Each structure stands twice: as structure tokens, then as C-alpha cells.
Length: 384
Image 1 (tube, rainbow, N blue to C red):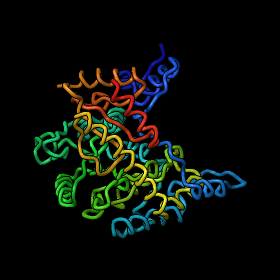
Image 2 (image 1 turned 180 degrees about the vertical axis):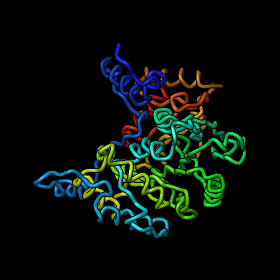
Image 3 (image 1 turned 135 degrees about the vertical axis):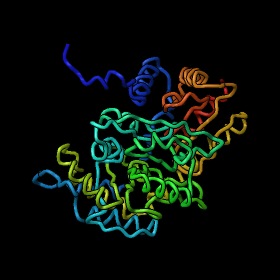
């Protein structure tokens, strides 16, 4: 047998891969599948973005630079200024990435000393990459269960100081996947100050910050209240329907950005020029982003109306594209798994809470199918 990294053997199947396999099984059985499991929306990418991608294809293909196109960094900085009123130095405080997932995965490689095996702190339920990246880069994941009675907020000031002294990085993710919880600037400022005092790198995954579904909600950015010791991670996947383009950026403390940039040539993960040209158009346009928010609002309202009629509880969803739904009669993750399997047998795919790292009686619905398919899916659900 070939030698292998022992960490790989510790990792369960990535949730999305398990769900893709389940989908193939259902399709093979002849079922029409309504897939609410993976956050990969079906709406077309705006035509202007696609045109910019095509026009950006050079005759001579060359390696992209680590720092990205000047115009790309400028577009990211301009969006931060419009959206949050935050002025950043596009040359030093912004770095384009191949989506936020790639950047999230590589972050511990920049900020973790594997010889010390420090902790990487984050809350759960959570995006699986926080844990997996920590393990693969030699850190110890420190997972704190987030509770509904505390608004799903990660509150590091409630944790053990001795363990915090061993912590190199802390992840926050608001608006939150999967619960849709949001936080205010006061919370962000408190977390930033807490981490700064302990020299913990604070990383904010803000990939859903532009996916607000109600007009009176504008989720804030960590950059509005802090710069030193912090990085924010941004993505066009959901905002602009560009999951397949793999485009995003990080912004924040210039020393941390420099360290990240120093690392990246070793991976060869810089975004291609056509992707950056398309991304410049996407970050510069709000019209298509608003149209997508309207669409996701309609989907949310269809599902919530059904859940209310059925007497099924769900957490408020004012941002993200996720509904965190309590399973009727269930008390733990086993109940969530059983309910998800029951829905799958009817051709409705969802993500049970254990796939997101918690033993809680919840399922996550990603608002992926079209509005019309959402209506058809809840009709089938109602018949169960």
C-alpha cells in the first residue's frame, strides 16, 4: 500500500460529494429530484459577465500574476467603498483569489505553525472547510457549538483563556451558513478587539454579505470596525451566480495580505485573466446582484409559507440563501438524518445538521431550485 497523509483517513466524505452521490442514485431510480442540498444556484450568470469572460480570453495564454490585475483589485476596492463605506489600498490591502473556498483552505498555511500545532477556533454548524483546512495544515480544530438561544454567535470571551492562548486563528461567518444568523457592528468590533489583544488572526468569511433578502437589512463587514489583525473573505459565487468561475478576494491588514500573497505562488492558484475580466464587471454592477436577491427572496417566501402552513419551525432568514429548519418531533442529529432520508426518498434533497458538524435536529435547505421548482417541491413535501 502506498504511503499517505494520515489526516486524509480521518476525514469523512466531503458532504457535497455524498449528496452528489445520493442525487445520482435518485436519478437512476427515475425520480425527479429537487435539490436543496448544495448551494449551487440554477439562475443564469448575467450576460454582461459572460461577455466579459469571452472578451477577456487572450490570444496568447500566460500565467496570471499572484497579485492579480490592477483593474481587478481596483474593482474589489471600489465595491468595498460603495457597499460598506470602507476605503482600502487596492495595491496592498486586496488580493484576488480563485473563489473564497480556495482562500479559506489555504489560510492556515499562512498563519499556522504546524510545529506548535495551534488551535483554529470556529463555531458549528459550519462550512466544512474550516475544520478540514486546519487538520490538513497541522492545526487542531477547536469547534464551539453555536446555539439558537445565543443567536448562533461565536462568543470567544466565554471560552477558556488557556486554550485561547494556544489559538492562532479564529473564523467567523456572518451572515451565517447554515442558520442565516446576522450580527451587528458592535459584535464585530468586540470580536476584533478580543482577538487583537491575544494576537489571534481573525478571519471573517463574508461570502454571503451581499445576499440580504430584506430591504431593511444590510449586513456589515468586519472592515468597517477593524483593519489590524483581520482578513475578510469575499466571493462572487452567490452574489453574481459565478460558482463555476471560482472568483473572490481577500482584504484587510496589509501585513496579513502580504503574507498570504507570499505563500500563493507555491500553489499556482491565481485566477485566470478571463475570470478576472468577468469579475471586474461583476463587482462593478449592482443591478444583477439586486435581481438575484429578488429571485432568492421569492424562493424563500415560497418555502417559508409552506413551512408555516405545515407547522414546521425555521430560523429567520433575512440573508444568505439558506433555511435552517427544525425537524418535527426530532431531538438530535439522528432525527435530522432520518428526516433527510425520508425527504430524499421523495426526491427532495437537503443537508442534515450532522453533515454540518452538529448533533442538532435541523436540516438545511439551500434555495437552489427555481421559484417554480420550489413550488412543486413543497407540494410534494406536503403530501408526505
